[in-house]
Amino acid sequence: MSGSDTTPLVQARGIVKRYGPTVALADGRLTVLPGESHALVGRNGAGKSTLVAVLTGLQAPDEGEVRFDGESAPALTDRDAWRRKVACVYQKPTVVPELTVAENLFINRQPTGRGRLISWRRLRQQAADLLDTWDVRVDPEARTRELKVEERQMVEIVRALSFGARFIVLDEPTAQLDNREIERLFTRMRALQDSGVTFLFISHHLQEVYEVCQTVTVLRDARWITTAPVAGLSRPALVEAMAGESVPEHERGHAYDADAVGIPVVLDARGLTSEAYAHVDLTVRGGEVVGLAGSSGSGKIELAETFAGLHTPTGGTAELDGRKLPFGDVRAALGAGVGCVPRDRHEQGLVAGMTVGDNATMSVLDRLGRFGFVSTDTRRGVAGGLIERLGIHTEGPDQPVADLSGGNAQKVVMARALASDPRLLVLINPTAGVDVKSKESLLARMDNAREDGTAVLVVSDELDDLRRCDRVLVLFHGRVVAEHPAGWRDHELIASIEGVDHG
Image 1 (cartoon, rainbow, N blue to C red):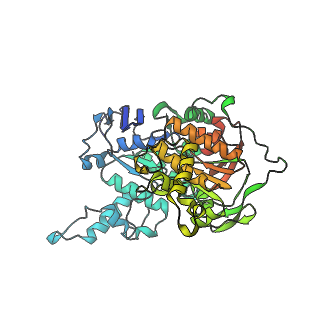
Image 2 (cartoon, rainbow, N blue to C red):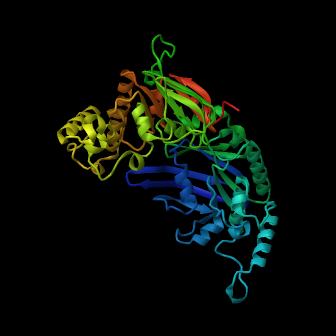
Image 3 (cartoon, rainbow, N blue to C red):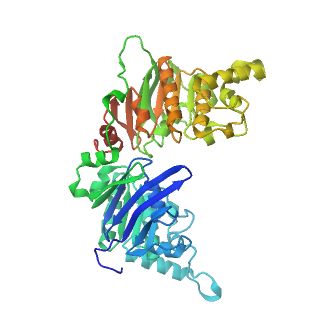
């Protein structure tokens, strides 16, 4: 490594990245010194992934510069030069499961012998030497699919080091690990640090930052907020940096008397368990809005999708108005009284080739006519009413839904969810990617559903969505770990989401 120890190994300054009208990063900054583990934290949408894409040469910044060891970053097209500088180990392994460890380590650069044929003996020997150099105890001839998750991660790290990179980005590396595996990963990280490897550690679990990192950089709302030594930064101060200003009390959700006389439980779930969540008990009463919060791997979306018929849990039960809720069948869930705004309006929420009116009414065709025959006038009338109720800006029910803006397209998805007068309304990231005016309109519809006595379950990464809830349940590694009644402070909720206030 050239330069002195005071020369940053990696430095990013003034990074700006836009995707069309969306500013993904307005002021990205990062200075990582050689041999440290440097944490990059921020809530979903803070700009972490965009900064990593720029740091690893996957995206060119619109403004700003990246330097490695004092020198300008390579040209985007020079992939070999980037591989010698930096590598990213993602949450989902990129190794090929059917190949051996040795084959994965030297994929597309296997040593050759006579006639340019692969020399398997040399391949095994080079792999064994490489693993030995970095003290990684994995059998080079083992099939990669047979390895534990953290062993696969170590294979990816060693592969990156073999190119000459000494800067490794670990993106949510502990998401699929249990406590013992996490401790083993951290032990390996410390040993590699002692050998001159530098890490950028991205995690939603702040206690891990305190365990394994020396420095932390916080991003919020696509901007750099602070960089500080971990040892000198209290957890409340770190959460406050991530959360920003608290919202005034008068903007918070209203208190809901959960024990109010005569308000029945609409949704009652007991012991729900699947690969994504475990032993979840959950109730939602009529006219109550319950939020589900958590980081990206918390299981919150899978839990909500279970009630909408998209998944079948491996254990537990759920009842809607005292009747067993059908799992794994979207149509049956709709028939049982569940309306849903899914997480991806393009993939799950809309049929792009159909009109606004057809999309808004497709869930209630059986109510509009006998044997599936629906008069055009009837459908247009129902669709027109929905368009008016939600303030959808369209030329009319016959306009192709593909022509609508993101906010209006989401309103169509909401219209269809409400068309069946559901007893339970499941909203998954209902305001993601929509403009401020549409967001307010969508949240107003949620309030109207509450006033109609509908039970509402909201999954969101947006604090403004969750603020409208009567209470918010926080999931962490698939378990409900906290419940916050209306009136919570931003830093309190974020502390629960990031795993600071529980074990």
